[in-house]
Length: 416
Image 1 (cartoon, one colour):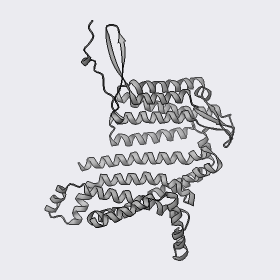
Image 2 (cartoon, helix red, strand yellow):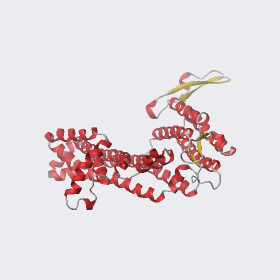
Image 3 (spheres, one colour):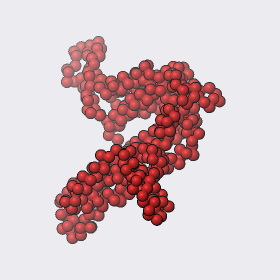
Image 4 (cartoon, one colour):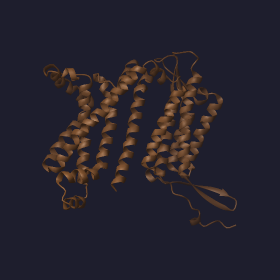
C-alpha cells in the first residue's frame, strides 16, 4: 500500500491566541505515516497542569489563621476517588490542550476541568478540617492557583478560536455567576478559610462591598458627565485639546497613594471653612478624597476616547448630515456621538476596571471598600483575610471588563 502524498496529509494549522502554530509529531501506522500537530500553547498549558498536579500542593492546612501552614498534595488533600477524578480531569485537559483539534471540545474540556477543580478544593477543605473545629484553616495551595491559571488560559484560547460573540460572552459571565452562587449556597465551600473569614464578617463584607461599588461607579458616572462634554469641547477647539490632555496626563503620573494624601489638606480646609460641607460628607479623610482621586484618574480615558471617537467619525457622514440641513447640535447628537459610541464605551470600560482596582487603596485613608480586608490581612499576616478582599475585587473587575467589552461590540454592530 502506497503512502499518501504529503499534500494529502491535511495537517491543520494551530489557531487562537497569537496564531502560534505547532510542532508536528509522526505517528507510524503499518502501511503509511500520519503527521499530527502539537499545539505550542497547549504544551505550556500541559506543563503548568503537570506542575500543579505533581510538584505543588493542592491545599494548605493550618491549625489556626496565623500559624505556618502544612502543604497537602492532591492525594493527601482528597479522598482517593476524588483525587483520582481530579487527576484524570487535569490529564484530559492537558492532552486535549496539546492535541485537541475541535474548538468546541477544547472549550468544553476547559470548562469541565475548571468545574472539577473548584469542586475538588471544597471537598479537600471538608476532608482536611476536623468536624466541629472552627479554628482550623484550609486554603487553596499553589497547585490550585497554577491549575486555575493554566485552565484560564486554555478557556481564553478556546474562546478566541471559537470567536464567541458578545451575547455568548454575556451568557458565559451569567452562567459563571450562577455556578459560583450555587456552590456557595450548597455549602461545599464552607470549610474553606476564605469563607470562614467571611462568615465572621458577613455584615461588614456587604457594607464594604457597597462602598467599593459606590466609589467605582459613582466616580465613573461623574467622569462621564464631565469628561464627555470636555472631550467634545477639546475636539471642537483644537487649541484647547493639547493643554487639557497634557494636564490630565500629569494627573495620571501621580501615584494613587500620593494623590489621596495631596487631597487631604484641601478637602479638610473645605470641611472646616465651607458651611454645610462636612454635613454632606466632605472631609480630609474618608470617602471624599478617595472619590475625588478616582474621578480625577477617570477623566483622561474619558476625554481622550471621546476626542478619538469623534475624530474618527467619517467626514462623509458629517457632510451628509450638514447637507440635510441639520444644525451643529443635531449633527453631534444624531450622527457624531452615535458613530463614536464604541470608542467612548471602550473608555468607560477602561475607567470602570481601573476604578475597581484603585478603590481598594481607598481603605488606607478610611474610604472603605474591599481594601479594608486586604490591609487588615496584611497587618495580621492573615492571607485568607487578604483573599477575602482581593478575590471579589478581581472577579468584579473581570466581569465588568467582559460585560462592557460585549456591550461595546454590540454597539459597533448596531452602528454598522
